[in-house]
Image 1 (cartoon, rainbow, N blue to C red):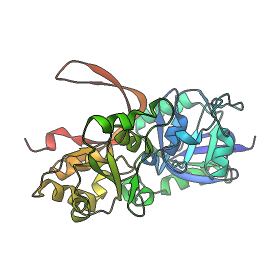
Image 2: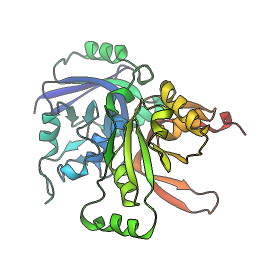
Image 3: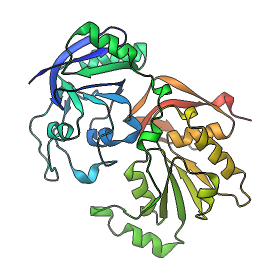
Amino acid sequence: MPLAKLALEDGTVVSGQAFGACPAERAGELVFNTSMSGYQEVLTDPSYKGQIVLMTYPLIGNYGITAEDEESARPQVEGFVVRELSRRSSNFRATTDLDSYLKRHGIPGIQGVDTRALTLKIRSLGAQRAVISSKDLDDRSLVAKAKASPKLDDVDLVGQVTAKKAYDWAEGFASEFAGAVEKAKGKKKVHRVVAIDYGVKRNILRHLVHQGCKVTVLPASATTEEVLKHRPDGVFLSNGPGDPARNVGAIRCVQGLMKAKRPVPIFGICLGHQILGLALGGKTFKMKFGHRGANQPVKDLRTGKVEITSQNHGYAVDLESLPK
């Protein structure tokens, strides 16, 4: 396998073997994800736009790639870092292997690096700007490129991943959930939901349909008037990448919805949740290294119940900044 290097803005350079697109070079913010499975969902999650993702689980690629499991139309990450790439895919649903998939979409990967040491570095220093390359192998040059790469706060990432125009989403779950939508529709009113797409994951839309909702997806640039024109029973604010405070138009849209003559329930996940917090007058801040994984415990303070959740966010709402 060809040589590849990963350089961090603090001067760290590690060498490994290239996979995926090669020769290639991409810059992004290096973050880690602690999930033991779900690498395909991670790769195609638009919330990772602008980031190089490091998987802490040591063996990645062992069940290949399945088209039905993609969260968007293509991989969204800038690069992929793993301890060991599995050369054999064992999954009857798989249509291709991870190496070929990343190659087809122009995403570079590096394997054979000490992912544990890199994770500890990020936990200590915080998320780092980085460059992954199998073209330029000069350490000084790569570190300089990492330092010169843009910070996530300075880039309109939502504009790169949002839908270009409005569309209706009607796809529910295949396989074992096949009849659930019709069952839900037969029991209760079908609610009309407008989902504002800041980088929405397909599975979230499937869940809305699974609950019997009629879903219309609008671009992130949607105004209050454009949302209300659909006469929604509820508005969903999606996940997405980057600094929530950059999305001034989205914040203004949500503030308009909260002041509408006909009140509309509003629900946000990830970036959508943060935009809702900003619209309410709160502030957001960048976390040191974020929460990214499928095993984050969350306690319901009302009941004492703990649920294990899937999370991916590098920003949070400052609780103290919200109006009482």
